[in-house]
Image 1 (cartoon, rainbow, N blue to C red):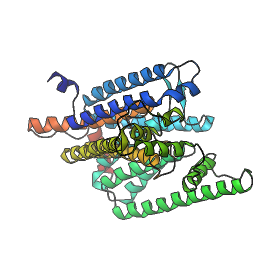
Image 2 (cartoon, rainbow, N blue to C red; image 1 turned 90 degrees about the horizontal axis):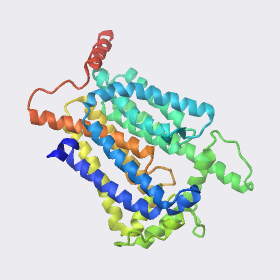
Image 3 (cartoon, rainbow, N blue to C red; image 1 turned 45 degrees about the horizontal axis):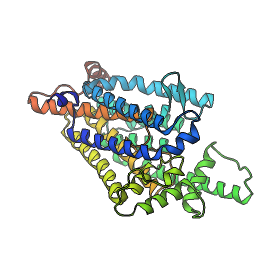
Length: 406
């Protein structure tokens, strides 16, 4: 009973999070070795593993703390968070700092990790405020501008994160009832543009190989990286010890069922075994049974989010859970697809399993918001009274002013 008061929200989601964190500790312990010795001269695998344990523990505190917050106040925070993320991304782009920001004591983090969480809450807020105008072209375009501003700033340094941000926020628009005709038309145009851009990147990279590595004119600095990843995916070379090939070998070694936690061979040779390719190491040590177990955990998490969304009486709460739950699930699917060779390398981590850092904490923030909504849903259902307003008073007043102007 005392634990129930601390860990508020959907109990099944808490169980899934607990199991994912256990898998994370075991997998990171097995796979952190080469990264520790190659990236840090003064740190041992044990030191990094203990750091990961600390991040996981802090994330539990964050999720539990946020689950006690009235979710309606996250709408106000989303406005500040959105513009703070925009400023950080602009500064990073202007200073050519890459994708990482380093802050004393706290360490380094990616502003895009903040952006993909706050953007979803921000879009949900706008759709809740303007629910009477959801089908109008003006609202569709306004939301698109807000989303595109983040995507354009993230794109030069991280194509896969930009794509994930856009798709997750764009799906919130779909769930929020925007005009489906506009939505599908733009979606199809976007798919064509992405495929076309990757095809051009592939062609330019192939041409540079034919010209003995000569530089070709690139629209974006990292276009060569994307071209290389697509080229390697389409034209794999089995005799090269690439991360992708070693991940396939790890999966093959795992077979159907295996129980050999800590006996990985391929993690000793992979610099990203603890991060981008950790799913391959899980399969190597536990077989396809273990890989399926992890996939089922994410699927249960997603369907519990769907259930919370359907039970939530408030539009803002429902859209927030739908968006954040979909974002986490999509990221997991992308990571697992890369590990098994279905997609080219993207650099996306496996949520709540890959080696922890600020990205782990920001995903914990998203989970905390989901649990906050779930907790409110349970309280409303147990109370049996009239549901409280979906948004805080200031947001209600803002919505009324918007409707009056209309």
